[in-house]
Length: 501
Image (cartoon, rainbow, N blue to C red; front, side):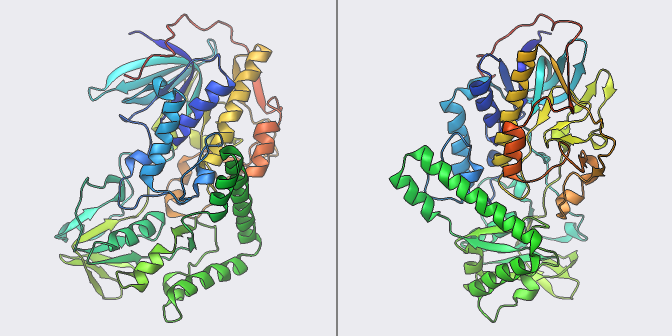
């Protein structure tokens, strides 16, 4: 078996992986790299999800890359536009030439003696085993299982005579026009599906066990559009990006400091949208504080419009059982439907499910501590891209990519080959990886790394603090241990410009 060697291997060709390729090219131009992508195309989430109305729930001035201005009018963009943006970035910068499609990474083993990762993947439908080596392994594989979404074990599911769909596996060309639809869920996917499907369905019912905070926001950012008309694109984009970052931070911090005030403000907005006769307390007032879970964004109040017009409705109740005709609720009411959509969430997956060993020792990520939100205690030359829970994903991923490049360049400058976060401070206490009450997080939290009670092990979820730590903070900070291997890396083939196979 021929083993190709790269300085850096990136796993995943979605939003994060393409960003990682760009930053490597810009900041570490002498390094060879390849991107291993398990699927057959670029785009990750934005290619996988194809349900009606798929869109971002973050504005594109912060979800977009720091280096590539978002130039379309809509700030809250649809999935196809975002996918085009990611693919355009890859094409414009030649990143697409570095991608190996249909390479599903299964395991990786680190040798301290060689300062090298050996990465094994299955290639193509035949699952042919292939092997690569690299000096740095960068996981950009997202945080959820691409194979299947989360669906509770609903009683009586087999009795229902209609179609049951999960948004993660939406059938191509599925026709729901004129049908009665129940969407189970109240998160970002549900509030996207309901108004979109209501345009053609006979009626859509959003069935929720617990309400979510829903905020209406203009689909277009008027200030951003004005700036783009009057300033150079990069300057306009930069100003808008910081405007939205600061407004987002202000709103989040206010939610933490004065939750009741923010709660009243959100609910006042819902009442203004739906009118005084709508039961906002039952259907749009969660039992938790704002930002204990992620807020749902609806562009131009489209969800509220579909409710006001009678094309959609909200039912807040518990499911007793599925029936032949629909769903029987605990209250005794039966909802009839032709189609049931289970917008019930994701299955989280730790670092793409990769099996990792370091010098023959299996790595249990639940027993590691996250360093700066991107590396892991006692795991050398290994990082992962993971975005914010309270802001756009790409804000943190951009900073992560820049830091990885700083780390690689520091090792080159100091003649070291191995960088390992070491927890030496006995006063650091373990804390859960995420302080988030959402079901999809709580179901899998025990499998994920921990965070620490103070830096550099603390996950602040704060863009401004992360800029200081990741862009300007010391690389050699006392917690990062640098070492030289006892051997040079083994001879290997290098094919940095090989086209994706």
